[in-house]
Image (tube, rainbow, N blue to C red; front, side, top):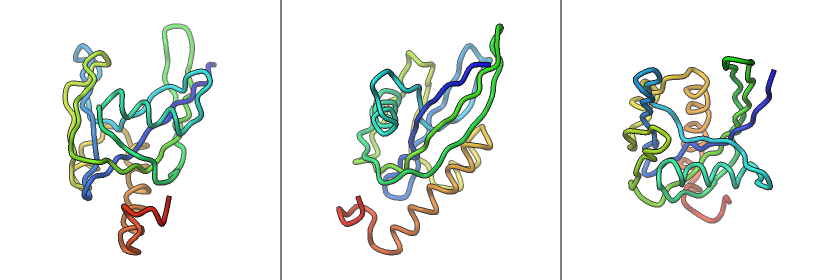
Length: 150
């Protein structure tokens, strides 16, 4: 068994969530949240910000940690157990551009209910629910987009 760690973001701008559409040789297709593997010397926040920037070209800032998800998958030689640490992030605009080298074919910001139904994986839907709940609480308390919170 191999253990791996990734970090990613639930990126929000004006109430909409940033998603990526991945299509790898028509075997892997679906909408996902931006995330990627921790590199040597990086902390989790640095990884999350770097991966969001690399995969979407979006400029985002971290608001808060929203939790960890875990899943397993099989390779031809082993089983990988992956932990993913997630951050609620705020984007500076609606701009995004999918990273073609990683087989992302589309990206965009979607309303919560659209994003929830588009996401391919249940664990990402759970993280989206948690992060969006945090976003709503911050908005309700007039803390979203201010330096009072972060």
